[in-house]
Length: 256
Figure 1 (tube, helix red, strand yellow):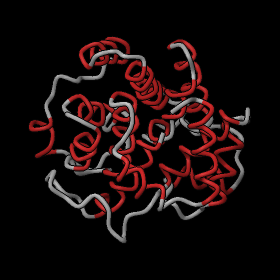
Figure 2: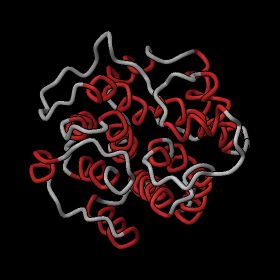
Figure 3: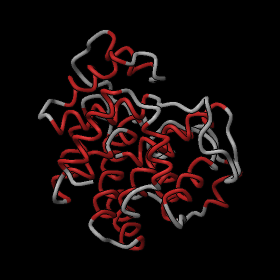
């Protein structure tokens, strides 16, 4: 899941200062993890230590209460609400990458992606976004081609993946919905030549750059069998010791 985390950190600067170009600086002193990373770690912690998703997500959100959460999510964890709030936002998709790496068959991946999403995002679009990303990661890490991944996502989730980045980029704006960002993130991966190129594609769309890059980064890590060591090193340097502990334990258990 370091691919997703690195994508979040790289994209964090460009969420506020959007760019429509691929030639941008990957890391700067302003780069840092956001809610995408915090909640990705939370999902990994839940899987790794057999915790329920809701309590793990709340625990990690409380550790980092100013990480940039959406308004409804903030109320959910700050007020310790027990039920979901019917969200179709991309928060379910941004945090799901550990699910795609941890489980051994597609049916289980889809089941766990749904479970991880519906503690907050129980709207059909919120669940669909998480399942699409998790399944793309699973298919990538199990050797499927881009054509096979594209076909599965289109048929199973009815996302339009026939658009190109050149078509999307000029008019694309900030969109926090799953339906308005997950397909774009997947297309960013499909058009890439390697991990770094995938992240540059995602950020260059503008909009919710950290989340799109986080989603793209998880899929790209799985497909390209990792991320460049220099990017991993710089991303890890931005994390807390507790985050790194979960990351390393997860990587060791699931042989990433």
